[in-house]
Length: 123
Image (tube, rainbow, N blue to C red; front, top):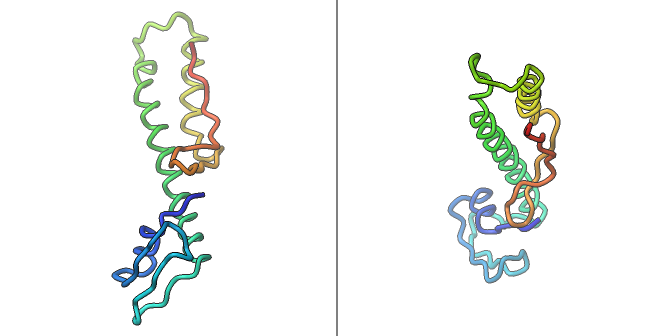
């Protein structure tokens, strides 16, 4: 996991006086006499917490987009080719709704959502 030290430190120690020379812990120059420099562990834990929250948000956002795109298949007069095709869409949409209880989203170092097995849309 890649940590954006400035973002995390600003959340942990608002208005702190510090400089980051490079994006790593050993290159944080702490100039604030009113607040203690957060430990590397505090920073990593906060970054993990933020990534977890963002992962869930991204999962729900993508899931909701897919549900909206497939709403038309649930309209009572949609011309499905068969009853079984209609059922496939119903199952697919239920699997999308169940994603938050069946998956554990994570973000890679680029901020992309990973560790998700998306249901396959009916053909």
